Image 1 (cartoon, helix red, strand yellow):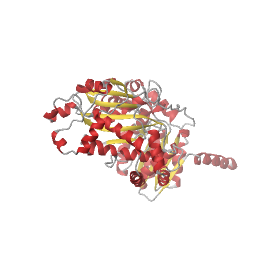
Image 2: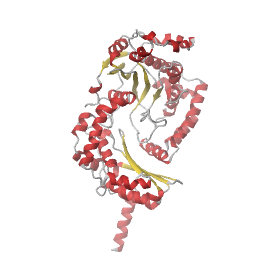
Image 3: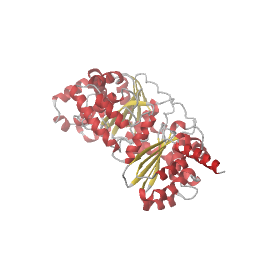
Image 4: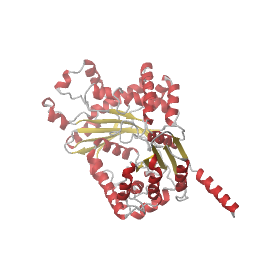
Length: 512
């Protein structure tokens, strides 16, 4: 009997230890744990878009069979502890952070949330209602910049599992029941679909406790849908989304990019991207041309992968790895005709604002870099910046752990370290070859959240490739050099390969 017990224990222990874990032990007052489930919005059933988001939200906001969320919040407050869930296209991450002195006490509360979530009807209705309001109202009213990004992805990924927002669609959320959430949790949040990450000052016993509990989740292998690559657009296809009395036009553009962090040319494109438009960096070319030299807006950036909450975060977040990428240009709002005419008497006759000129300026610079490449000095300075800057990505245990877990998604061991190594060996020729290969402006999706009063005029101007002279106020014009005006003349008539322009009312977006 004793022998059988030890055989059982050996089998059970081996099973526990086989759980995939990323460990980052360090001297710290805190313990950070991340549970990364390969289960994002791509697993939402057709007609119930938003189910993964609702399930993850309920896990983090509805308590357990033992305690309500309100009771849990009261217990966690003295511990300075908390937990939260993030859902993206292919990954849902549950993170908790707690002072090491309270780790065991906290975990006893959290484990019930993970293993025995209450999914109460009251909490379900509250979270579902909030999601619906976010989709139909908040996203469209609170930030045109984020609105433009969501609308762009709706276009770019049409026909794929990436198309709908991770929070879902209006009709999708409305169709979801509490039973759907319970079944989705049992089907997709399983022991075979998760990676454990832990950082800080923790004991082996604490980690084994987590692994044992994770192994008590359903022993099934979820059917994760295949993610199809989006189609390249035919020409430049523009969607105008009009809003009444809008002071700015938020522009977001993109086209599919067939590389990711594991690709050989990733480091080269990271340099190209940083040179063109590193997120919230004033040295980048688009920032210099559109904001700095012409005072048109407050930020112009490019991206070679998804950047979560760019309006709020200086550094990229973790927990959002994606197998499908796209090159994007983010032109943060430029003034509309409504805005310019209300401020400057000398601009009272203009029909459209700065949107078409800003788009042309961005395309002009991308075409220049594609054909000319970077100079030796530009390459060295940008590469040197990136090698230093990316080290800031991992300043905290939470960030270090997050990037290590994202690395696993791409089949890498340590993305930040491996990127630095690739950058150290990179040549100017490789960077310019990548720019020539991957940059283009002939086929692009464009979304513009603009003023209703100029939507028709802007549509006509874009379709006919009408010359779009830059409209400066007298005060700004007096401060500009001849060099600026000379480039303006080149840019204002730049041919754009516009094949289609549609006007879509805000209320028609994110419904299905």
